Amino acid sequence: MANALRPSPAPLPAPLAAPPRPSDLRLDRSRDDLLTAFGKATLNDRYLLEGESYQDMFARVSCAFADDVPHAQRLYDAMSRLWFMPATPVLSNGGTNRGLPISCFLNSVPDSLDGIVNTWNENVWLASNGGGIGTYWGRVRSIGEKVRGGVTSGIIPFIHVMDGLTLAISQGSLRRGSAAVYLDVHHPEIEEFLEIRKASGDFNRKGLNLHHGINVTDEFMHAVRDGAMFALRSPKTNEVIREVNARQLWQRILETRLQTGEPYLLFIDTVNRALPKHQRELGLKVSTSNLCSEITLPTGIDHRDEERTAVCCLSSLNLETWHEWCDAPDFIEDVMRFLDNVLTHFITVAPDGMKRARYAALRERSVGLGVMGFHSFLQAEGIPFEGALAKSWNMKMFRKIRRAADAASVALAKERGPCPDAAERGIMARFSHKLSIAPTASISIICGGTSACVEPIPANIYIHKTLSGAFAVRNRHLAAILARKGADTPAVWQSIIEHEGSVAHLDVLNEQEKAVFRTAFEIDQRWVVDLAADRAPYVCQSQSINLYLPADIDKWDLHMLHWTAWKRGMKSLYYCRSKSISRAAFAGKLAGNEAAATPMQVAAHTDYEECLACQ
Image (tube, rainbow, N blue to C red):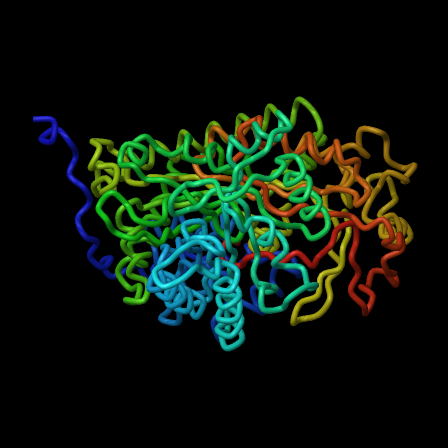
């Protein structure tokens, strides 16, 4: 009887009906004016088809994944007004036959030679399509453990092969694939794993072209708190291979993050506690994340004895334009319908080499609706990042977005059927997961140069080089205030450059204004953690959260930032961006209003690789 009351799962997706055509839409060419010169150059360099205009591109993508003409028109209007932007694989490939609209994948390596080789083969397929891949190696036995006919060589040599495969495939691809590898903190090879990105040592035991992340457990954090020894255990038998001092291992992890920016940290028990109820009841678990640490979806063998490679398709709302769309009826539902159609398209056209990804996408239908422009919104409103008003807006925004996304999931489930994972447990939900906050470095440039993700801005002026040339990118909200004060001059901007993007030295600004325009390295990072923790309950996946720290940070402060992130319920931490003590304060010159010929690094490193699959 209980089964009779359960909703039927969505049927296998048929190809979408013939989509609307761009010629069916009313295009507003004047909206080109909302794009900056830098944004236009970015579109020209990477995303426009031959002979395509900016508005044509928005129309192409809107029509490719719309339900009908009215839906396509609403999507076009929202996209062209820069209210939201799909991830760049959708912009590049939507409405074309040249590639897939999804390129964010997570998989897990079985503990067998066949399983390892099959994962290599899958990763070759994914990388050849420009995929960003997060691979979990924690199921594979560690070096020296018994196998039939001898002992294992451990995970490091196999990771080294994955490194070479990813590099080889990427070098021959138009859109470069990238990969990250994840390992549990209790795996016996965790200490060598920490070193795989360092150039010193045996090259054959390195993964210099890979990124890496660590699954940090509550058990480990409790051992750090207690100053206890911590057991490293066999993935196969769970027997203790050896013990390490938890605090010393934690210190090594944090020092490596400060020196190299990595490893990413995934607080794995927090992640699994927050899984949707229907996935917990099915026995599904998360064991890895992706290249940007914001995707937390189940991988590996599921309750049906099938292997899952998780897939997530992404779009981001522009919080800088919040007041324009926050009361627009059905806006978020329109975007969720768009993402659902992207998923259906992927499931329909993905090649057999991606069958595990196709299966996972069909079963859970997870999407990642994220945001960008949070700091730009605060600056437009004259609100400092560090303060109660920022906390209030943060909570208000994410509460509203989550409620609207949940409502859209239920509405689409009633219309199209719930995803099979949810239907199996009697849950009326089209999407297992709805929100994740990706880095958005590329699409925030397209959206008028708004601030990326939920991050504080790294500098109030910086130089960015593209195929079309170098662009001096200035904070337009700061420029407006300087103009009102008669201080929007080359000399003032030059002084900002000399102070690494900071305005703290400008006498023309009052203390409130200086607080509003503090840069990422000037902001107390406890506020970054605090705001991220406040919004975490509304984000069903995770957030790409960077920490901006001086290289000489007190070790206790470094520990407490990371400890608080775990204690407050954050699910992951992305890069630790460290400001070199020795970096010259003077980063370059501006001649008049023209960019200098050489690129300038202002306030923040630019050598942390960002994954284009997520932005």
